[in-house]
Length: 413
Image (cartoon, rainbow, N blue to C red):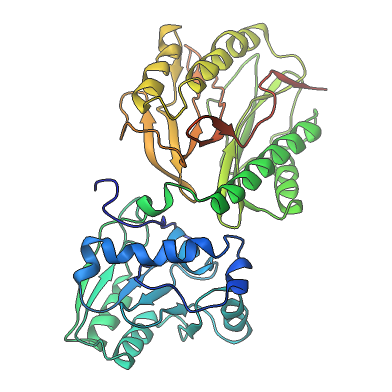
């Protein structure tokens, strides 16, 4: 898929995604309530007419993913997927999971005027009814993936119900194309990323404040989550784990922090991600509980941090991803290993491009992109890793660090 061939919005497993050609007929005040203002509305719908699929007759269905949030303002919590029907020449219809007060609350929040009840998960039937209602029962229906990362589409029971209800329609599975609509952020979107970045810093500082001998890993997670929620944000993920620097046994944090309690001489390896109105940022910096073992201090001071700073110099609009990849050799050149991934993009959540130790995808660094630099060097013994990561917005003339806080060896009492 070439840049510019498609439109944008990334699917994730938790909120819906579709595609269309029209600007929704809703008031600007409703659109502003989502925080992404009115400007992107036309930008989000009109690009569909320039895609290769604009010649297909009839509607497009959208599953649950980041694009649902991007196009409707809805983030699905209850089901595997919700669906947005976007006819080319009619108003879009959102088929939402629940009914009653849940449906009404969702209808008031989203900028889609027509929100239908799935009738306890009968999405395929409801979609078929709406399509017949609009006289599109012989249309071509384009269906992008629910999960673009692994290419999963509508569940088979929903697809069968849709096909049974529309025997003369043609359902076409579309490749993922929303990335190109999300990769370059508008100023309104950048403001959300900035807020998410500040929440990441708040979460890290809350962990630093809480990190003392006797505190459990899960209590650190609670502190980080509380800071994010108190800032009107959402927790995307909180990965953290602790190990002794004198006898280390951890190269990356725990996605599910344990009951292990901190001890003097530990290090907390972490990667935190916070969201604001759907847009996320990420951060990571080791936290030492008391003075670390000399070998761990040397590892951080002479390899992990200098290597990160060396790579960060390449994260600029005038550079290429190949420059970042080349800078990532720093760790091997100093006798250390590294976790495979060095950098990735952020659409709403983690996305293309990716830079790995042995390869990179794409080579262009574009103004408006959000990039997460995240090397994770590992000691030669393979027993200790230090994740260091920050989120950047790329501008023509500068690189903006939205998770800016001093990069230093953090030692708590």
